[in-house]
Length: 334
Image (cartoon, rainbow, N blue to C red; front, side, top):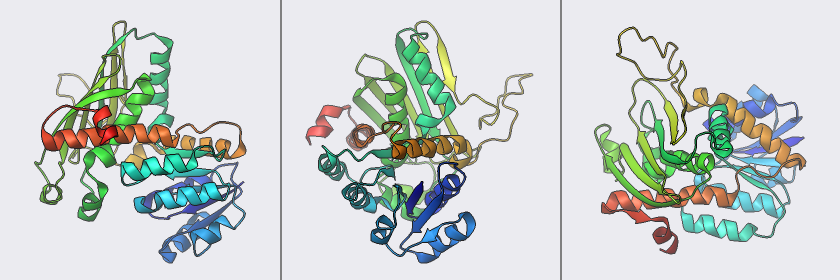
C-alpha cells in the first residue's frame, strides 16, 4: 500500500522510518511546511515529496499519517475523511477539547476509519497487563499506579504551547489506565510543584505532578509524572488485585537504582528516550494501522477513545489550579 505522511518533524520522521520497514507498505508520500524536513526524510527512508496536504491527498495514497503540529490535526483529519482515506493521527485530536468534540461530531456516520496514536496500547507489557485484568486472574482490583517520568524537560517553546503536563504527558497514563482496566474515571484530585526549570513555572505549568483518579468501580489509580528524572525515561504500571499483583516496566533497562544489599537489578542501561522505550510498540501500532487501511481490523483507538483521556487531563488541570476534587462530569458540561 501507499501511505502519506503529513509532518516530518521528530515523530513524523520516526514514523517514516518505521513505515518504510513494513512489508505492507510499498511507497511513501511526504509533505511538510518546511520542505527541507520532507526532503531529508525522503533521502533517508525513500518516498515522494509533494508540496501540500492537498497534493498528498491527490497522490493516490491508501492511508495517511498525521504527525503535523497539533493545531493542524482537526483540519487534516477531516480532509482525510472527506477524501475517503483512512487516517492515523498522533494525539491529541485537537488542542482544545471543544474542537475535539467538533471533530468527533463531524465524522459521525462516516465509514472512514480513524486511529489516534496512543502507542502504549501496543506495548507487550501493557497488552499482557490488560489480558491479566480481563481474564480475572488478579481478582477485583483495588489499586493502580502509573508513572511517566521524563529525563529532561522539553524546550520552553514546547511547554508554552503544550497546554500543560496533564494534557501532553499524563494523558498517556490516563489512556492506558482506561484501556488496561476497562473502567472509566469519575473523579480526580491533582497536585503539582515546580522544583526545576523556571520557564515551566513561568508558563503557568508544573514540572512534577501527582493525581488520584477514582474509577467507576471504586478502584483508586495513582498517577505520577515529572519533567526531571535524571536517571532516564521511566514508564511503569502496577496493578493490584485481591488475588494477585502485576507490574509493567520492571525490566533491566528500568531507570532506577536499588540500594538493597546484594541486589543487582536492574542491570541494564536505562531507557533515555520515549522512542527507545517504545520502539517495538510504535512498530506494532503502525502495523495495526496498515491492517485498518486494509480493512482487516477496526480502529484500535478511536477519536472517542482519545477524547476520554482528554477529559481526564482537563479535570486534572482544573483540579491543580483550584486545589479541589473535580468530576469528569463537571468538565464535560463546562
